[in-house]
Length: 140
Image 1 (cartoon, rainbow, N blue to C red):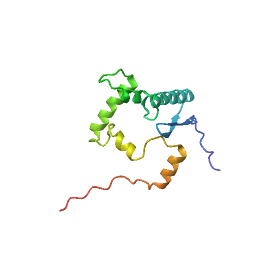
Image 2: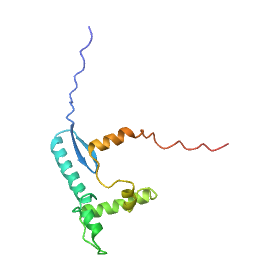
Image 3: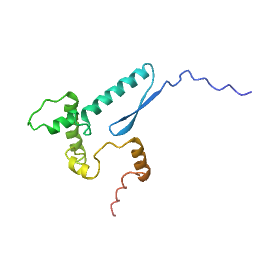
Image 4: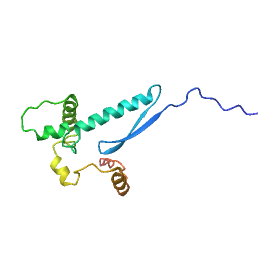
């Protein structure tokens, strides 16, 4: 006679939530006690950051900052952290990440958020990225 299947004492309580934010569909996951409340709080916070930093809403803090001619303007903690992160990302990436390239980005056609259906169509039409090429081996 075979032994009964082991019973696990722990059951997953993972909860998921998706939201459209930052021009993409964001999936949030949380587990354990308070998971549902954590998801609600995370979604609220992400929407706050999005509302502050989007370049597609003229009333966003980022758009207001970009339109302000003054050399020094007041800024929220979110915008100050973003500005610091942009500088850090630019340094770390050797200039690959550059938040000053708005004109070029818009000339390339990114002038509005794409709908989830548009993003899915673009994803389906784009070959999967397989990573960077392997480095060349030194010759002997």
